[in-house]
Length: 137
Image (cartoon, helix red, strand yellow):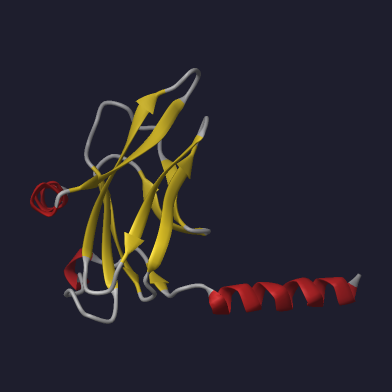
């Protein structure tokens, strides 16, 4: 049993070492500048009538807890296609082709499903995404 646990731990370390560096939940005063070595993803959820919080994932890592008037900044150091997703009643997602030196604004919200609220994601244009991002205090 001990050997199996050691093997599982070694495999997890291997997978973590292969995944991109993702810095989530950066303090708003420490928002990184756009840089050619990494992309910056701004995820936010404006205020709304429904609370219904849920976790937001970038690939397999939780990067944000989506709740009303919340926001997070994520630095991604490896280019590629990434799935941003959340799950309540169903799994809903948005796929981004993340490139270094770019900024992405992703609005998170909920829509009513069959029994529960479903997560939703929109890739926003930079101007409107930045305006909504800045309005959240």
